[in-house]
Image 1 (cartoon, rainbow, N blue to C red):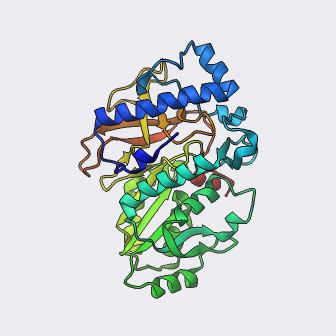
Image 2: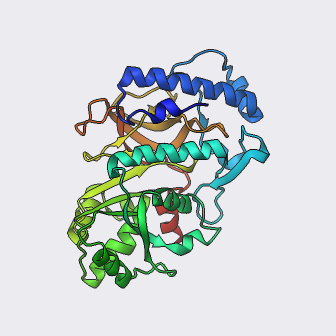
Image 3: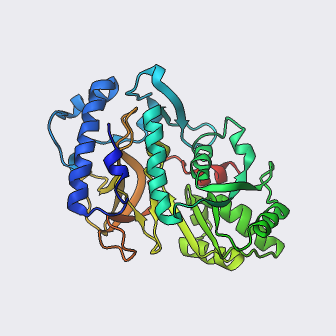
Length: 359
């Protein structure tokens, strides 16, 4: 499927009508393609009485429960064309999702991620401090969503330095040396939410240290469950980061291995945004009808990127609230929303949350 027209568009430039029309065409084509090339998906559509030959609006697109990727190998590309198999984060004993990528799907994920994140970081790469240990990329048991996240965001950084040693301890001397070497430059910090808070912010506080990172941009993500249980809100997280490190430019993101690339970035107003590569609906859990703005429900995510597997329309196990569309004070068009948490009984899956649970 040719996504070049989408890559030429500013990720947050389309209004509701234009985006719905454009995404609708791509998503209907994907539904038909996966119906033809993935037998389990075809059986699901037939059981639903869904006609893939008809054009359906985005809100009527059939969705798969995201947990199906833990139960079945869902693949639409030939086995010999698969170049990468991604697995979701999970604690010991949990089943993990298996996502099969061919070369084209993997390349499109990278292109979409580049277009989205560049609107927040700019096109010039910056010296990068990764709040993790380099050992995560060497341990194949850990190289899942966490390792993929680090590798994916590393393309936006130069002179990459890991802030934690192999024992997950903060290497203060290494961090101080990195800051001194790049004094006056804009820096890029990346890490998973709990790890940034636990291993950088809290450790600096414990040692009575402060860093001068007022010229840095921090992008973090991967789950809030552990921090919420410790009564650390998003506002408190940002306030403490600024107090300890001077960081004022902080952006959370929402994403999942089942739809890698089409992440939802947090804007300056604290809202998560859907780009031209993706969209969301909030659905009522009792009948899956679409909830209006302001009403809490299950998050359905849509993405035009999954071509090698039928992951273009998923019902997540996360709850959220649609805040609005095309009218965020930050100026970005598209839907903007917030994530409230996981549904009761859902497995822990965020990179931060699974790591915190193991810890």
